[in-house]
Structure formats: C-alpha cells, structure tokens
Length: 266
Length: 284
Image (cartoon, rainbow over all chains, first blue to last red; front, side, top):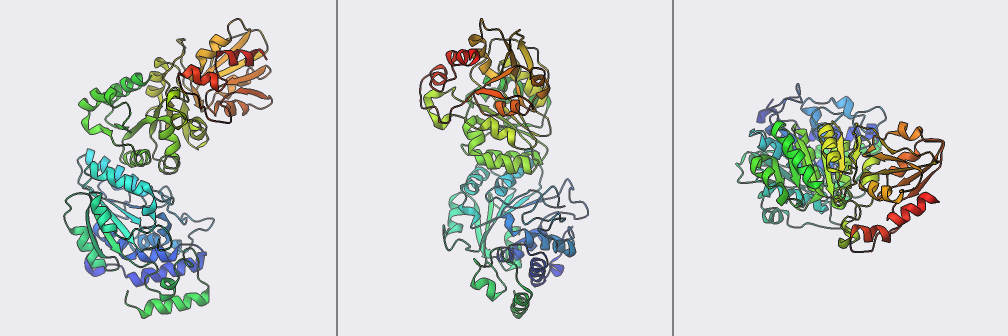
C-alpha cells in the first residue's frame, strides 16, 4: 500500500495522539517521539508495505533503532492501519501488547525489538545483507538518534554496511541534539560522509523534504540527517526536553500542550 | 576441533543454502575453501563482534542460518547484550561457535580467556550450550543442532579427550562406572585430565557434551553418591546443583583471572585445575 502525497497523515494530529496516549497510560517518551513524526510518516509513505499483510514477502523493512520513541512509532503505525489509536492508549500497561519499547513478536509491522541503543541499525544491516544475497530489490530503512549515536555499535554497523556495499539500506539520523548535556555529535553529516555514507541533510520536520531525500537515488549506503527539535510542536517541551524525557502530562498540562501544538503550524 | 567445525559447516553449506558464515577475522585462512565455493555466504565481516551478532539477527530474519565465529571471550562476553537482545529476545537465533576455550591460549593473558561464556549463554532463555570434547563430538553436535530454532553456542577447544564415545543428543554419558561412593562430573576437553587424575581411583565418571539442556536425569541416578564437578568454566556445576537433594562439590575456575602465561597445562596448574589438583580433589 502506498499513499499519495495528498493523503499523508496529519502530523499535528499524530502529535496530539501522542500526548493523549501519554496522559491515558502514564507512559511514553514524548519529546523524542515528537522529533521523528515527519521522518516516520515519510518512510511509511515511501516503503512498500501492506498493513493487511504485515509479513508480505516483498515488503520493505523498517527498524526503529531508537526504540524509546515507541509511542511516536505506534501513533504513526496507527495512522497506517497497523494499530488502533485505542490500543496505542494502552502503552506500557499490564495487558497491552505495546511496551515503551517495541516488541516485534507482539506488534504487527514491527521488524525488530529494540530499546537498548545501538542494536537496531546492526540488525537492519543484516537484513539488508540477507536481501542482497537473495538478489531482491527490497529496501531496508532504519532510524537512529543522535543520543544513540553515542554507542560505538552504531558506527560499527555503519562501517560494515558501507564495506558490504549495502546500497539497499537507508539510515535516517534524527539530529534532535538530545545530547546537548553530554557527548555531542555536532557534525553528523560530515561524520556519516566520512564513514562512507552517501549523506545528505534535510529539515526533519518537512515531510516533503524527507520524501525527496528518500527518493534520491543512492550512490551507496544512504544517510539522511534529519535536523529536528526534541519536543517540536510544543514550546513547553522544547523549553525543557530533559525534564520531559519520560514524563506524562497532567490533564492541566495536556491542555497547555494542546494549545501550544495547535497554535503552531508544525 | 576448529578444523572439524569448518569441515562440517562446509559440508552442510553444500546442501543447505541457508548457511551463512560470519567471521570476526579469526580462522579466515582455514575457511578459504568455504569462501571460494560460497563467496556470497562467507563474510569476514570485521573485528566488530557487536555488529557480527546484530547482523546475524538480521540475516536470520531473512531466512538464513547465520554462523558467527571468533574467539570465545569476544564472541560472547563482548557482544553479550547483542546476543541477549538481538538473537534471543528478538527470536532471531544464530549458531555461535567460539574458539580458545578458557585458557587454551594462556600465553595471551586474561583478555583472551572466556570466563563466563558458558554460564552466560546457559542462563539466557531459549538457548543451547554445547561443549564438545573431540572432533567427532563437534561434528555430531553441529549436524544435529545447527538448524534448531533457538540460539546454539558451540564452545570449541584446541584440546580433546582421547575417548570415542557413543553420542546421543541431549544425553550425558557414563564413561566409567565405579563401585565407590564418588561420582565425578565433567564436560568437554576436561575429560582428559579427569581420566588421568582418576587412574587407580574407584570413581564413576559422568561426561556431558551438552550443558544446556542438561541431562539432569543421568545425574539423578547417582544422586546418592558424592557428586564432584570438575569444569574449566562456570555453568556445569550450577546445572548439576539443579538436581535436588544433594550437595555438590566443585573444582572450577577461581575467583581471580589466570595470570599465568605458557601452555594450557601451565595455566591449569596456576588456577588449580591440572591433573594433580583434580586427583587431590577426587581423593578428598
């Protein structure tokens, strides 16, 4: 199933859903989920996939390497028909399939269980290698965070992907600068290029820009640095995303956040 | 044992197109015929054990049977979390084949000693742990288990025991049945010094090529004797202790790394696991 540009999901609505799920369940990482909404929408609009047959043999694959953005992921999966919003509201609760990090054995459409940082990109590289061995044209996409890129295993995996010429692999790098208080990576574009990726940089909150970057033919392992903001859409979240890293709003706070969200054109 | 591992998988790869070999720049020369015959199923991927394991999970997701091989300390202990999350939690199983045993390469020092590999692999859910003691056992265990739907750890040693034992999957073996009250329990190549140490002693010897799943039933048959475990790793003792009702004595790894260089026998002497130490333990 491919969506046309005309019926792409509304990213403001997805952010509102993220907030409502966090309030309903008391769980989820809001700011990091907010930073990847456009990237996820663009990837799912680009990939060959079918919610009616999540295990279709010819599907493209997506791995959310920064697994703590699961709430945002679930709300995008709901837009594409893999989950219902009602189920997303149950994240992190006892009878739910949806943890605060995604489990591939429980959730249709999820290809890899992640959570510990620096794993998903290596799994994605192995998937791309397997597809390459079979001579298939299927594609693999993975999304890593700048905080996650503190892990050496991220760069190991990139080196292996480049060395193995996995030109069917696209790495989206969520540069939301979450690491401003510790190990910063100030120049991800240069670093990814230096590691041998065919790297480009886009406004990570511009779906059309990400779509264009995804469509650009790659001359190698494609890396798309998405310049984003952690908490994009709500001034309160942007103002102190560390405090909001894993915090659910009260009802009063939700009202403020929703007002901020809808006052913006995200 | 390592050459047998290559020979067995080379043979299996001829009939099973799912087999993909991933090396961490170890044993590469030995695999040159495998590489020549199956260039798209042989990857000397790099000295990056975490990614070797993650990539193996990805390959499994695409229907391959990945076999990851390097030195035990790096394969298991460096990439512990990738094994736990990418292979086990994700249910993308792989075959992990190590070399170097515990102190096979004592000259390389503690950095190259696999210390908790067996116990770590054993304590993870949905895993199998094999410690073959001969080439024949290596061949048997790989052929029998390489395609099993859970992660399998094959711990190879450079050393062997001298016996040609009748193999049965998941079963321990009574190597020697004594009339006395002592039963010594060992695994893998350690059977060699155990045999030497028990010469002239009236003891029963139980041998295990498979640490997990463990043949508790065999141990239970000897539970009314004094159970003494001799092992060059952690894991076998704990498996034996799971047989309720008896206390178990252990001669195993000390609470410090082996700082002795030299041969495997030098190292075993240093950590109290050589033939003399075992003999003293059995007579105690």
